[in-house]
Length: 341
Ligand SMILES: [Zn+2]
Image 1 (spheres, rainbow, N blue to C red):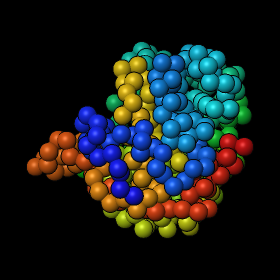
Image 2: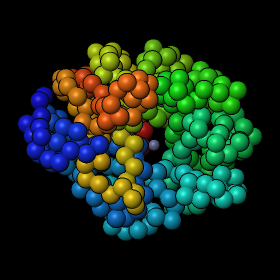
Image 3: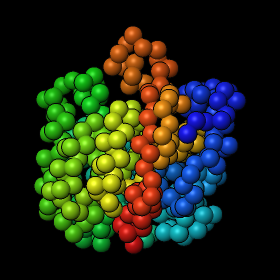
């Protein structure tokens, strides 16, 4: 599928090709429902633009990590939780530097989100979490274990995790293994938890944090029937999955119900931007369901980080996996429907 609106709009970091995303949104072959299981819709103002774009791209339901205090304003306008939008319990990252945010306040919020009908909780464990708090973001710390136990006892049965980060970051950012551990180190405590909480559905964000190595992700899926992965983080997935689109297609075909669609769109005060949100849907849908071969429209800073001779505005090569039929329906909504019940 070749875009028909190249160079028709002003160029920016989310639109290096000058695409008219509104027009391009209507050109995808798939016209059924789509559930986006991984977003960060911050405020009502951002939600208004976000929902306009989500609708253009066929998204019928959105699952969002939203600050507890902003949920009511969004549900007042977009319906009760579980209808068009559903929420994932998260700490108050806006108060990251205040004491208690990731300890007492977080435990309190786990209860408050549950009172609002929340069934999903995120246990974020990116290595850079160690820069925010010594203990809170380690999957095997006593504090983390206490929060997981509390969530389980309160009835949460869907746990989202972010374990790992791009291989490129372990090469260039996490250069102190004594502090951050190796990429493989990140997964051992997760595997223990997947076994311990075997009646919980665990969603490994960002293709389980390892789109670079689908054989490794396959091993995780094989060892843990309660583990599924989402496709979120557009730049990362486009960069890595485009290297072997046929491998990604086979991975989705071989794991029906275990791969769910998500974008990781962050829609918040300070970035209310049509092209920013639209580019994530355009790039991920193009990657998943088309045979496009060309530049991604999104600037990917990892490219020049790894190879400083490259221009800072470089974009990755995007090669579509051409997924269709039941595999596509499963990825776009059937699998998430089953998980969300
Ligand atoms: Zn996210």
